[in-house]
Image 1 (cartoon, rainbow, N blue to C red):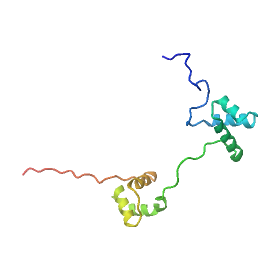
Image 2: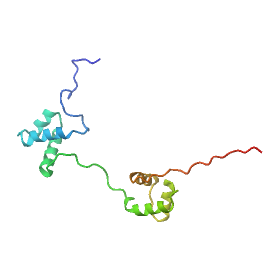
Image 3: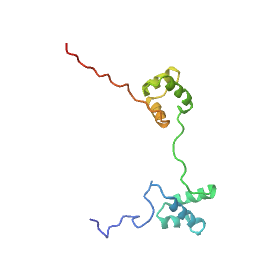
Image 4: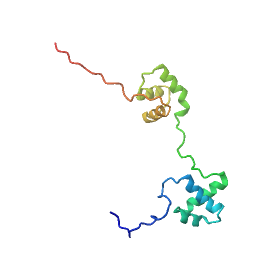
Length: 143
């Protein structure tokens, strides 16, 4: 049950909430309003319910790069990546190795990585291993 008379700021605007991805269509409309429509970035942002600084950034990107697609996001490359061939060789020679065992084998060769780094590398390259060796099941024998 909602009260018709209670509106939050931005309810009537077609834009998205802060921090959310904006569609290419919306980006294109904002940039077209500024570049081809002669609107200011602030006016276009107000019309579409966006932040003016965002529209200015898209216009600058369009003028410099010719598109408004989102840029690639992500961090730097992992320092384990250059050792890919060495890791594949170790796994080919010893396929029973676990993540911890592979980490220890790399440490024996002078390469120090955390178990999580090794695990993420294996996952990324679809070379996943078990974290631990299987437990032994003991059976008690009656005498």
